[in-house]
Length: 208
Image (cartoon, rainbow, N blue to C red; front, side):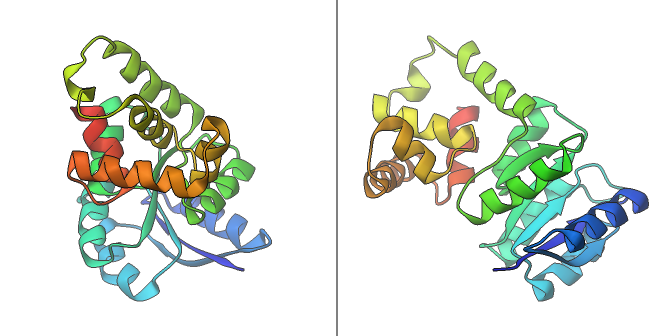
């Protein structure tokens, strides 16, 4: 299966190099590349790629704003933020807007392909430095029991695994559960947090 990818980035050289790399990689195809969020909003609903690689800081509209608007028009669109910024607030804003993962541009090219594959399989990939920030956030909040009081210990383990970018199979293997059981726990988390997607669940859990 060919994975179709679109790129939204105002750096011409980087945009072109990623597009060329994707087109050379077996199993991938770059279907479009946009220099601004505004252009992307006009074109992506028609392109319907499997995955969008989205920069954050662009000339006018930010990538986070673009994601929020795209997810309203195309709810099933998978967006990976690809940025130089590892600021915690931007991470949480991107997840809350509907991004499925958060990657740093210094990521090795082969890891970028791995992340694109992962998100199409239900994962939520993050660069190692980003995942570390998420873990540190949990550690700083240790002892504040009120945000987690509504979730059981197992539900908490599952949502923290989602925050680290683990796919359902990874969670099932690590926690010694079946995939249907993992899905049941995730459904309960959605109900308790009043959300409808894994990115909403992670963002709301992190910010509570």
